[in-house]
Length: 85
Image 1 (cartoon, one colour):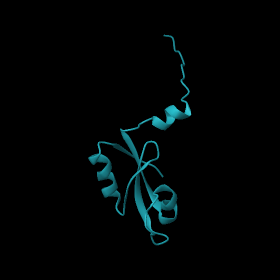
Image 2 (cartoon, one colour):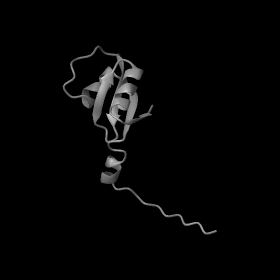
Image 3 (cartoon, helix red, strand yellow):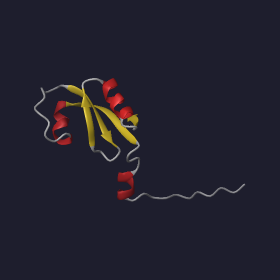
């Protein structure tokens, strides 16, 4: 049996589109991080922990105070949720 180790390096552009339209990532986020990720968001009390759902390319999709609601948002949009820490 012959084994060939063929690797394909992804370009930055290819990596940015990997999982686009099919995968979303879910993570807990605090109010201080929200300002840069969710433009136009009203002021939220410091120290507030929320659940954020992002598209594979990092685009914010939704914000929730409950993890289950954020997961439901992914599933309603036919996205496979992936949790990150």
